[in-house]
Image 1 (cartoon, helix red, strand yellow):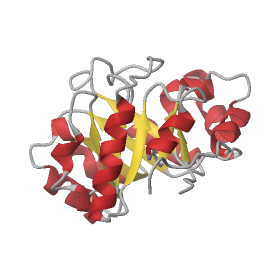
Image 2 (image 1 turned 180 degrees about the horizontal axis):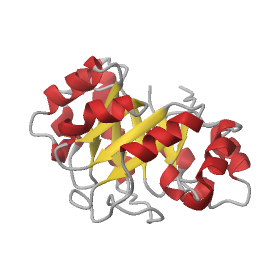
Image 3 (image 1 turned 45 degrees about the vertical axis):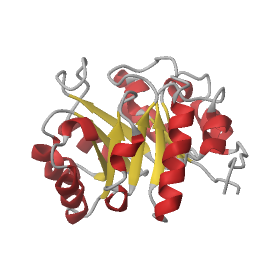
Image 4 (image 1 turned 180 degrees about the vertical axis):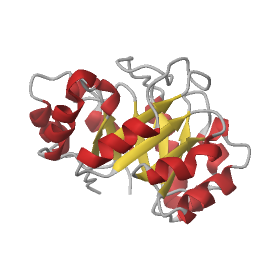
Length: 225
């Protein structure tokens, strides 16, 4: 089965001295979403930005904002990020003791609900929650910093998740975040990925628009149906 991928450039890798320029550049590209990494310095060892920057990006962006909350107590901020323009909100399994309620709240706010897993967290833990998740984000690096090397154990993990989703017959999308670029995009798509988050590979390219086009044009057939 041929898989038509969604591409979500990660704003974390953009030039923050020229953020509006980079966002408008993506407006004119084939990118599907903009990926917004929110880090609090507690759940991950880095601090990025919050609601105000997200709101400013939303004012400029013509792409849906895919907001990834790498924070503790994400439930406290779901409504604030929805109001800041998030159309997809992803929380971490590891940060949500009441994950079903968190995903339900996101949906009640009118956004798509996602759940993210760190590299060490097994996908099997999502078996009872998949029907509530519009998206599962697999971290293919340890979260917190851009520009890291891809963890190749992500591919068999991705394959297991694809089998789980297909067996439950849900419409859940699989997103891969971390070290993604042309060097591994086809393998990820063949294994069952739907959405590729590309940060450094896009904004670090000489021509970011052409890099998005190249990722979007990769033709991959899944290894199984």
